[in-house]
Image 1 (tube, rainbow, N blue to C red):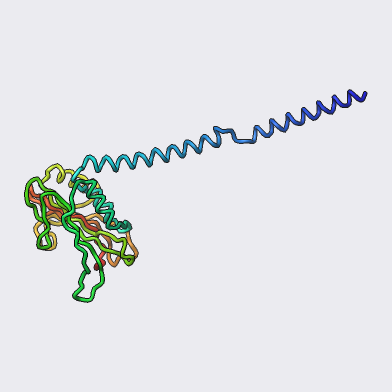
Image 2 (spheres, one colour):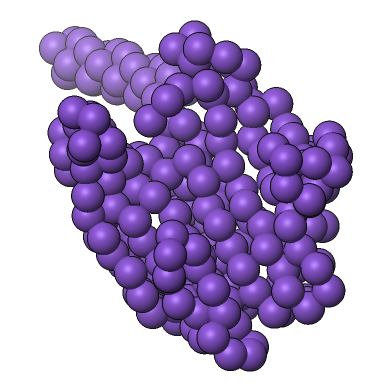
Length: 236
């Protein structure tokens, strides 16, 4: 009798344990529901990051010695900040040597305090009398001002001036510009002969005027001369 009771107790305990195990298994996330899903997410993010990095590298590689419309627009975005090392590295990757790096104080003679650097990069070009000029063919040059913010370490660029004899570069630049939504405005660029294009920028509550992206095209056949800029009415 005692033996039967012990056996019955053991069977009951086994049954209870089995039920608890099954219940636990039903409510516990399997590896495929938990760990593997997170791994898949991480893999997707890694693939996306690698793809973006590869695209950037390919763009620089495919446009060696060429500074594209897309690059210029990225940099002149009002929320984008960079430093001196960034430009040295960027144009070195593009195989465009630095021709001018002049640090100065804007309006120094009038008591101003807006430190900036005047930069010029290019091949077969020179910077002379505040202008970038070709010295031979083929040529490609980029000139701009880098304005420091209050930190005196970082800052921004609001305009790139580009000259080149490269027909293919100019055709791609204009195609990219129009695809980006730049619209023709005028054949007069502040009293100079050329074409003005404009695209409305995102509203900025700190801007004194409605901000716009502009492209000014002073090109003639075989001598292409364009400026890409962001203007918000602020006086630097």
